[in-house]
Image (tube, rainbow, N blue to C red; front, side, top):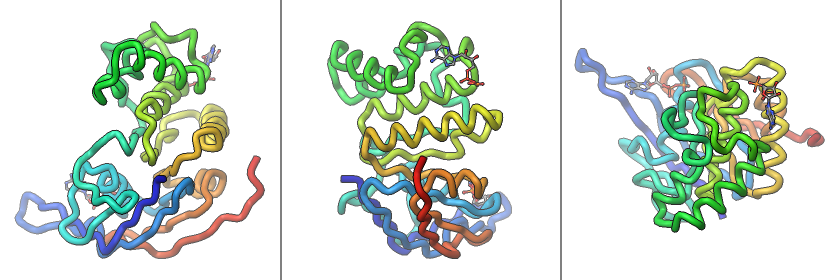
Length: 227
Ligand code: ADP
Ligand code: ADP
């Protein structure tokens, strides 16, 4: 299961001048198991903050978020995260990057390696297992980042503009690959983007947020035939 329930979440950031910025204002939403949901909205509307709160990287001032009924307080392996870029350990090889999570979960070296190989294969980069991130193209690095997030076998994959730094053609390839991964792995995906096109292409459901303070403006169900 990977059901996320966001209930009346508000979160403000303190500014240096003593004031505060309300980043999330009473946000409530239910994300169903295996749903592919996209958050869109103008820059500064709280998309990243909401994603980080679901990840357990930010704590709401009020309200709560639960995953399968359990309150989220800290990051754990039930949620995997993929950022826009620079999220790989540069001094580690591809395979070391992917085994890191399973090792942290206390899995043996052999088991972690097995896991890592499985997801490396899923993103089609087996032959780059011993390469370093700087030796790979942007698209390949994001494939590794996806494999690394999946290696923990999370219930929910949280993605913050993961393809935003890629050229249009690579982005398109990765979008298709992600849909494929999603279909094969049957997990919930929460995806932040500021591209309406990307949201429409990927999502079952699009959540539109308004700027300052971040609120949900509308929720759109996408009913397009999938590729
Ligand atoms: P988005 O991802 O939609 O661009 P963010 O979630 O990054 O929006 O930001 C929402 C609001 O919170 C913005 O006004 C931003 O300036 C503010 N904010 C985000 N992170 C911090 C932070 N760490 N400290 C202070 N203000 C922040
Ligand atoms: P980008 O950032 O532009 O990722 P690609 O993902 O298409 O674009 O990769 C760039 C180059 O890396 C391509 O020219 C391709 O030959 C090579 N490449 C990418 N993925 C693989 C792969 N799985 N096996 C072999 N070569 C690959």
